[in-house]
Length: 116
Image (tube, rainbow, N blue to C red; front, side, top):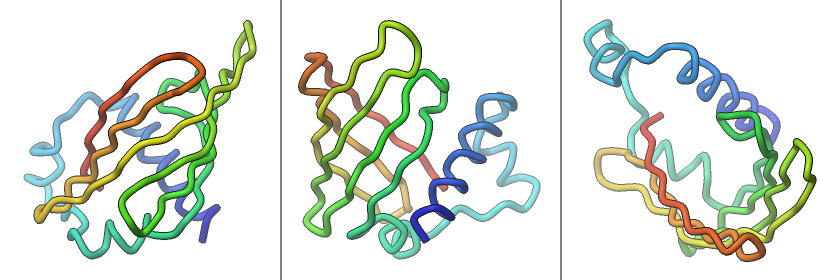
């Protein structure tokens, strides 16, 4: 399942990077976003790895059932470096998945939300 979800996220990220259409574009064409329960089931208690949407870094993160996550992010290009990653994740009633991430060793904070 770990590899399937990583592949799914990679494909979704690749499609997003190549197609600038909005979520509404796909919804108008019959796409259905995952429910909150479906999204939680994908992430809760799982470790996922893959490439970032830009392809500049790879990650391995464990999403705990208490809404926290941790792991590492590694920069692919030179200069090569790795940072510990930690933060929180949430899924709202509409199925929107959000993370608040701290890349500890790079002194960076990131927030990102997505629908699946």
